Length: 435
Image (cartoon, rainbow, N blue to C red; front, side, top):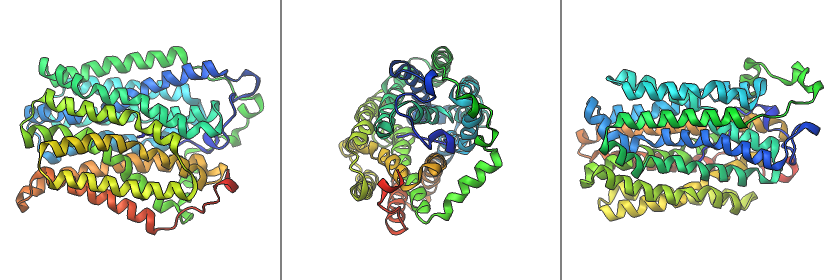
């Protein structure tokens, strides 16, 4: 889901341009689209890495002897390093721009994938996953910042949703195709193929993405570029606003529910609970992914705004909670499969949060707000994957099936985020006055 706008520094998202961002040397729309699609390739690979554990988990756990808790920590390592690096990447975008930020960071993805493909211990596997997360950290951020600079402001939510839908191709690759590759060779080849794909995405960005230079006076204005310490102060300063805490609580679980189900538990659940083969579970993941691919773009276009958007966010979070909870309690294959696919259709509702963030903060604060939103979202994924993995490990000692414990933990976290958003102060609905 997005996935997202990260430490987009204030200058990065404060004042989206019409169709051209930097005066006479700005981009035309065709050039902007070509560059955005190249950047979306990087985010597509990022989506593949964050969801591969669902299919790769069983063979990795079998070969290296991992417990459910270790499996959850392994999946969470990507999102923890990804989320922890968001502020750094946002500052880099202010100082060095979209092109240099992604070109410097993304090679760490290739290195992490290659290391993972050769890992013979849990420690090396975790190190590789952390490197991949760091390398992918700016992948969606550069897309949203690029959209804000080179497309009309009223297209921001819709285009962010479109990029998320395109990136679903990466999630698609970690369904049946990855399952087939692993069964034909090994899980190590999965990492090897993704490493090659990451290298090709980096080459496409290097070849195609060239932003115009800012006006000369802005280029020499050092006050327009905040230091890392100043950016951190400004980011933490958002908590002085009463509606920030509710937004963070909701953001931490909304996207996490989909990624934790699709990216961690779906494959192991189908293989171990129902005896599915890896390819059969990959087919279910494929159906769920296809359902999810159109979802962000649809919700982005249907965004009702204002009070109705808040109602949608609350109602859809409750629906998501009920779906995940039902999967935990009702142990029938057709129920789990049907709800997984339905959850894919629902998953794009998180994109509505982008419109909420945009309306909830004045222009000078939007970059920081989107940065905080992104950090909450991906650190929340890490937390949910760790917590559900811990629950799966502890469940049997309390007479609870591991997947029931994991899914009910996820449902509880989804509900807690929705209740926090409902009960804590929310942004005034005068979004038009802040625009």
